[in-house]
Amino acid sequence: MSGFSGKYYYAMDEKGRLMIPAPFRDIVLTNYSPQLMVANSAFDSCLNVYPLEEWQKLVDKVRLLPRSDKSVRYFLRKVIASAVETAIDKQGRILVPSAHRQDTGLDGEVVLVGQVEMIEIWSKSAWAQETDSSRVDRDVLEASLSRYGI
Image (cartoon, rainbow, N blue to C red; front, side, top):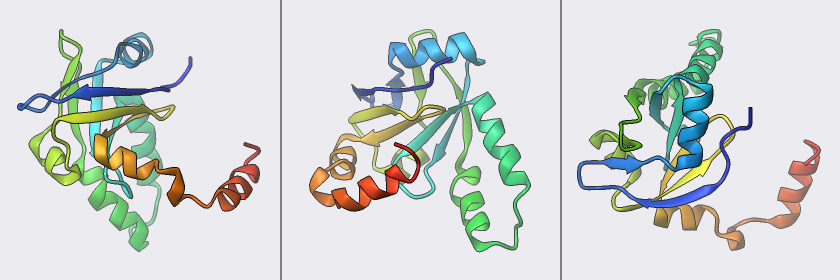
């Protein structure tokens, strides 16, 4: 099974409904149940959308972490507490809850980005800022990724 990859621009309607790109829908419907979990990202101004099975893997890892660790508590409060279940409807859309749209500034044009086991949803402006190559120290980035063999 290949993971989620690619970048797609869509418009979210006024009710918060968002089309899931056909390649992403195919991956979900072929490899997972149709249920998805939408949660705030821990560190970025975007949403993470997980197939329920991938979400459960994350929850299983988090369950083993010590609550005495401040970073674990932050992750629980920011990500786990924000998670809501949704499903792809007959038109290929999901409903992005109002609270999630407010937390991330999602309104109108958005970018859906494949991230192997999940999908990120960014506002178009936040995505442009996040991926602005002038903000990246290329030498540091190259050195960091080369440690992972990339």
